[in-house]
Picture 1: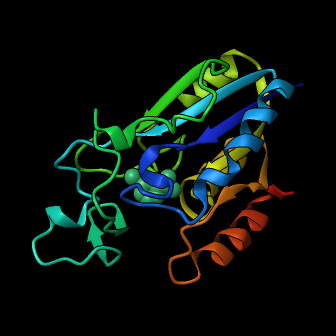
Picture 2 (picture 1 turned 120 degrees about the vertical axis):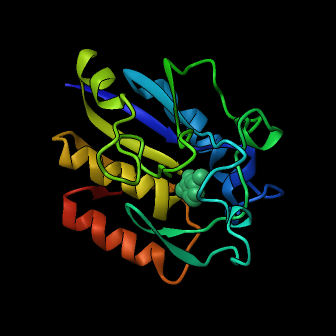
Length: 198
Ligand code: VGL
Ligand code: ZN
């Protein structure tokens, strides 16, 4: 069996000082960097939105950040503008070791669909291509770390299980947004899906 470390969205905007900062999000960086040596492959994901992205509250006149709206594909949280393609905030955190990464997968670049998961966009049908990459390389065991625990990490790990990969989330190498109990809900959903939380 081969194991990949999937480092989710360790970007400037999700760390303190960023536009959608996760509290203490940067404190997990040394742990993540140190883990990289122990894996057959390291894959980074990068949230990567066009300026007119439908997940940005400021693209919905009158809508407050963190409110929810109905999209053609279902319920969607409206986020503060973040990780705009080419912006400083979309860059990986400067302390993240990127040289070890074999692959960087960008997600959320279609204006009309958000993408929390590294495998499927939020319409739950559009694929990012990550599954094919992992299968071609024979990477069947996946460990997830990064931001945010309750959104992109959880959705990615649950999709990994749906696709038949072994999936583990290293809780102390993640950080949560925790919007209305979303961290506890994510833990429950992951356990339900057969993700191991360590
Ligand atoms: C994320 C909200 C919006 C994440 C990305 O990385 O968890 N959350 N975009
Ligand atoms: Zn995003």
